[in-house]
Image 1 (cartoon, helix red, strand yellow):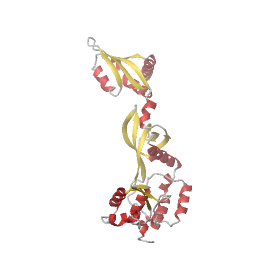
Image 2: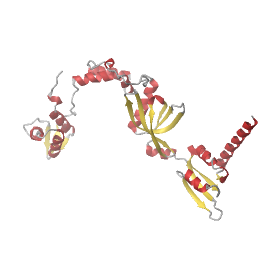
Image 3: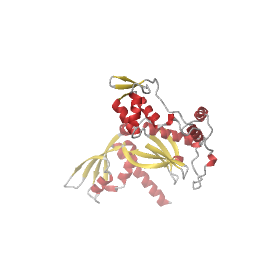
Length: 319
């Protein structure tokens, strides 16, 4: 195995960068050499690239230099790099990114022996309950989340909490991180609800039970899910109800008219249809100091919830 080769030298790398630009000015050539080379590189390399007795890789056209190559140049992999890639492909985590056929084709193309065997590595402080990287469902969840990250799209994720609760939300995943100590992958997410990003968090991939890709971007999410409904509410001047109501529903769009004589307040609130049940529960917590005036369907749902609660209380007393 060669330790030194001219095609892996700094000058070869600089020349590659210049040729990939296709057309460059002499000033741009100088800048690229200075940024990537040594203090004396401009003196040696620039004449070789632009002079008549140089490498002949650039053709001068007026004030520009154009690459004569039909294809972009690339630096081939070293034998050491090939051996390392073969070792990486034998890692079960590579199956999260590539299927079995792709891994076989790449291994064949590389045509090298593995740089090391997996049993050569021993993580003495690693937990034994790592993720199952062979699980087909785990692999699919990983790829769906990775696709959402690349596409900057929202994804619907269901996951199981440590207490056994199942949670489902729309998330914008930002990155996937591997913990060598835990031998687990986790995903960093922004959670979207009520037409906005509400918080951020971390989900262990092993806890994910369902993923569903969407074509929704964070910008369009608001337009897609923003189905507003409106309710008119009367708030009585008791128990500091007006101030408490305004604080409780501070995030909602609202219009209010305050009657100074009676101290009552008429409020129109706008809320997302998907959050209607939550709004009802929050309104009921105010008791008799709040009355929903309209719409009729909203009043009916509140009455049904109150009736069910009364029936449950009566049943409990009888027992």
